[in-house]
Length: 267
Length: 266
Image (cartoon, rainbow over all chains, first blue to last red; front, top):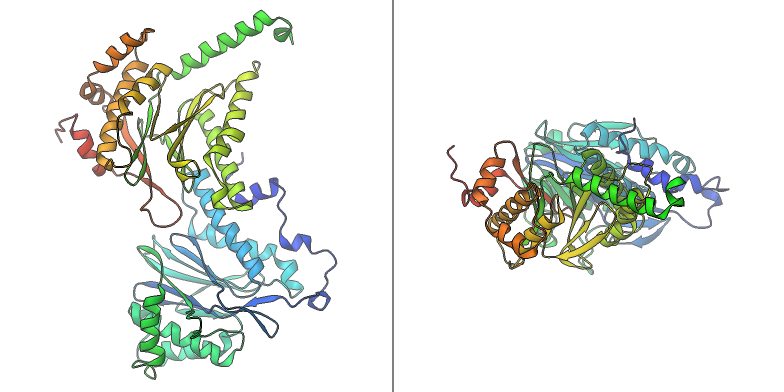
């Protein structure tokens, strides 16, 4: 007996095909008549109230800046986000499928999808995307962050391009700017005298802004605060009371304090 | 088919089918929909079994009838909403589509196919802030006939109950009502619908029916029914954060409305 709560099954019944299934003759990135688009630095860490997830806003194609307002931290439900690095086209499709899959499951089966099942769904979608990833054009390397009501704490998971899933104890970062800040995150967490998990909300947001600024210093594909257009990175928090996006005004205040001003230079 | 060879027998079969379905449905617990300041409230009394369901971000479904038939219709509505929502956008999911192209034709086909079991169900759907308006309802009858309502709606075991329940609700300013007042009005309408649905012989004469409805002892009906049943109330509330506007209403929020009718000993 089929329970019928699987949204991917429903999609297939209505004729949907995954991007990798439509590849045709493309054998490698060299065969593409265009430069594929990439999204860059995302990071997540545990702070005092839950989890913080942040990403810069730049999307690039080769050495071209394609877009400076990309939102790479995508809401999946009231307690979960997926932050994306890699191909935005596939990543947005995966996020869209997941968002519908979680809701569909709850509405059809009259129960919330478990955290383990949500992780598994994301992992399967990344695996379904393997043909694209293998050809170097559509790899997606997301971070999944959520608040686990049962455990009463935030949780962060990261994936590799093949869909393997790992839970991160303190922090994680992926994307082209991540090598530039992975060590900085370790240093901050281990040696600065205040671990991420001890930071309050303001300090957590301030440090996320500092880290993204650092990534943009060393990675040309990572955008920094755009003064001319007033574009800040995306920063979201997930706590027991749910998902919240940090508004521009608040980011501006903390940016001045942590990146430009008084807290700057102090870890 | 033998039945369609003989028009008279076909008509007779259809009439028998109506009698059969109406007989199966008539004792069901009514469902009442009424707008309030923050959105839409659906209220019923049920035997600890869920009767009001989420279809999509701003769409609810409730029904009376056979639970497995309701389940099939509920799932069909959810499938349709989610495939439109994914392939087009959330804004393209409208109650009108679900009724006109989904539930209406499905129930009509079920009713017409006289050699198979029809859907033993009357369905009520609600949509908050859609293309057609802020507080829109549709009802779909067991034969696939559907009707659109604005502001308030009710579905009971018999059509006469629907009419009297809606009459009870029709004077309300559904855009200004508090949740508690909306719940009070819904409970009153429910009791009237329940009373009429349980009558041995529902008066055919409109005046007589109105008189019966006007004389229903709401407090008594509710007190009697609450021995076995529980109030189930769900809202689509605009002030809910996020896209999904569905929310179960707690018993405490309904308590003041119930207290108008029943002095609670506990």
